[in-house]
Image (cartoon, rainbow, N blue to C red; front, side):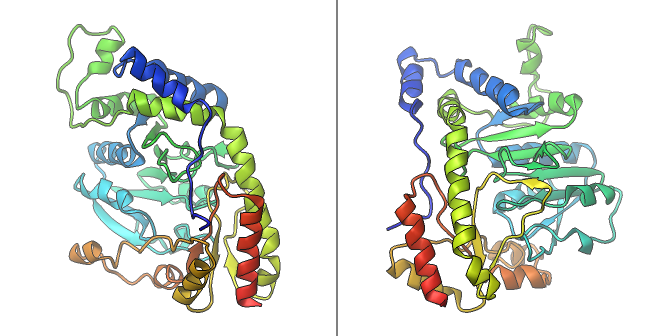
Length: 366
């Protein structure tokens, strides 16, 4: 079976984990500090906190938004449950929005009736990104980027996740690079980052004690345990060191798919994601949009030893979404979410795996 995904195995992972175990230094910040330095110096991320997941990063963003008086957030229904859960847990109302079929990002042209205490949460899907320049013109009180899939991807040569007031990135095992489980919270302003530290450290001002500004820390805010562990940081550092290799392998596979399916696209048997020229992708995913029966196609791929994935079930008409009264009409989300198929794209694929995938899909349609 050609697996849909396999996490990259970094050469230094075992060595770094053994260092943590042998030193019995689980509360140490050696690898966390190393990751912070790497993200800042090598990739250009600033004003961030390492979290145990992108979900944690989203929850920090939601709590901060609530503190700033946000009452409602607009976001696409085509996203993972964590995006919506973060705001529901912070007593923020949700308004789901439709997507654009060209790239599965939120269709900003359909957003109307923006209120003073509204926030906008963009979800950058696969290799593209929401039109951030358009989003900024809408003048939302708060702009949040769910850039879970978009580590080191850029829009107008600036890192996704750094445009909004808050940005969130995932280092889950399904992403290009991972920390076992992990994430990144990004703040545009240093003042908000300081407030985020209270939330991050269980609602205490421990960060002031660490900085030498206080002798004792105390409870000052709503918060939770959102920190990344030293073990996860050890894994992440080993992955960051191999990032260029990972990126190049994924780019080669993506471009092979582009070339291999060009006839199918021209003949309109399938559609593929349209990537804005303003976006520099990280080659996280490759998907096709079918025109016929998806289950039949998936069965065909499985019988030929190729594992594919369908993407998200839209949140607005999920069981829980309906129970919350969020089941509104979103025609494009409902239509195109039933047609999307994501293909294997990971560093464990051989050239023959990629050739076989291309050949079998072409054979299915031609």
